[in-house]
Image (cartoon, rainbow, N blue to C red; front, side, top):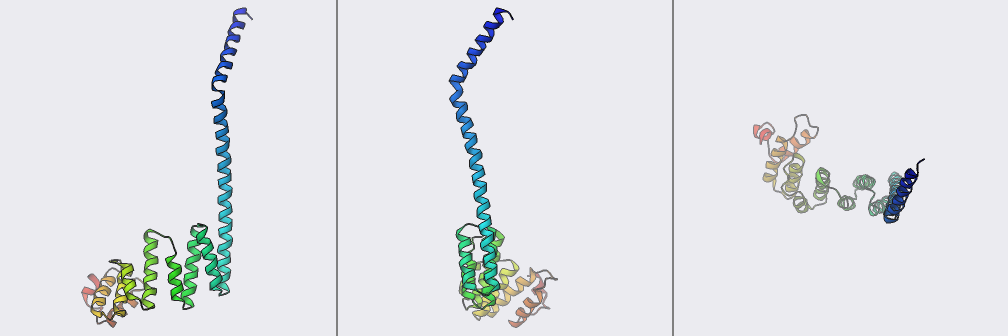
Length: 213
């Protein structure tokens, strides 16, 4: 190996050492940051898995309580699920609890349970409609109408009609039932019940207006 080559290698080594002295702290910091991010991600995953496992356990506890007809205990478990931000588990448990409360005739409790759901979009529309039906059942048609607002879908129109019937506003209810029927598919299973409601308030199913309004 020529002396010039040795000098070149020595010079290159010095350049590498100098570069490391100048940038070593940055490299080390980057490595430490990367390791911290990896560790943080693994910790977050473990936390999420732990929360899901806990939510699943509480959901099963709700199911057991409902099977044993212990609605108070089920309500406590649902509240714990909601507090833990358990997502779909909390929603499903609340819906099951509300169903059991309705079957037990505890309509006010069911309304409270449903109102506790934090939902959006079409799901919120369905929940609001269920609450409105229960409000009509419990003699609060004004609240039902306020909750539904100017709902124009078939179910919303029907429930608004039910609320008006409860207020003895049969003519207005008839108009809403007609509109609801016009938006309902001819093969829909709930169509027959809606036709009966329409006839009960003096409407005629045979009237073409009932099908097309």
